[in-house]
Image (cartoon, rainbow, N blue to C red):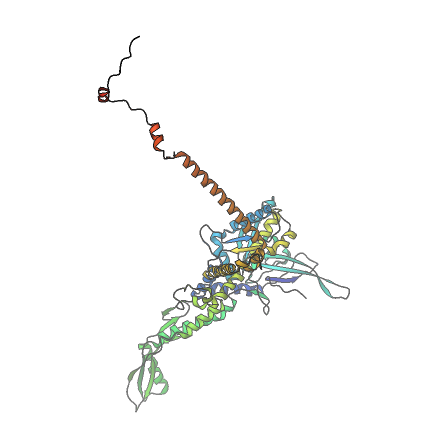
Length: 529
């Protein structure tokens, strides 16, 4: 029994005896290609395009000077040098994809088509240079194939002994059929590509009835068709019932039936005003290949009745009712998992409040976006795996061990997610404040960090290191401030107070003035001996 193929691969069996294989994709791949074209046609409808734009803009956020997605390696037990090399190679992959500017288009293609494929271009002479270029491949032109090898066992039963996977590329696509065969068969051949040279991501949705992978727009096919028919019906009804109809009663006298009908037809063709509504373009024109909308009524009247008479029918009175159209619009948005509040006319403004006031539809929408991001991350996993193996940073076995420990953090701008995160931080801080008196007596600091603040060991070590670093910076800042204050004080000479005696002793002797010298008595002369 063959395993279920949820990766959109076509299963074939190997047959020996000649070169090459004959694979008929006409019955299966043709439907897949038509389905992709159907999805692309749906994405051009205004309501469907608005819903898709909400989904893609919510999943891929592009802001200036900010990376749309980052890789998280906190749970990987490798050295910091290996982690830095992994982050560097992931950034190179984002550069090759030009994800900063084309991330919206890549995600939209994957969401609409249900699959996306890139051809990996490398340097054959030097594989250690890694991926050189990534070329987008239309999923209509490429198909994954699984070739199962069977052998007879001892009981005579055919069992699977091996699986050979590869991709088949056809520039004409698989819509009209493709054959992979030997050159001698003369049929159209597809190009066989190694699985290592292609990265192929599907939506992950599998239709078990039709045995094929479907896209996220598959469940919106019926609501969208119903919405289109209802809109056309409303337009036709408004155009046909808005004007008042005329009724012509034609007096045919005693004319035979055939001549009477011919007489009425002649008058109809002479005075008829026929308008046609084209549903494909929305135009009103005169085209007899379409169903007539505006017609007058021509009724024959026999002898004995009244003569020719023209009356009118009243126009429609309920032309303002659009509940049927709105119903199918809401149904379309529900099928695409988009909240009804995002419909035009449902809610004019976004109400800012607590997370408990956010509608349930917004919560479900945020979870749906998270699932889309996780599935789309398969593109990064496969490209990063190829890049690390080619550059011999790690082997395939080592990458498979750490694959589930790597995460991709997408840039978010959802108000609900930000509001929820802020409220959780506020509630945790309130609980921490209430438990603070009991830390060291009934609760340990480690228990508070693990159970109240919801921190893991890595976060605890990081916070403690940052706290110590901040303390050291604060101490250095205080030392620098104290040193600068001391320098300033030394530059300014202090003014000290002096006592009167010191001021007297320190005052210089005053020279007598000329008047004081005149008033003084002459000094007595000493007797001569």
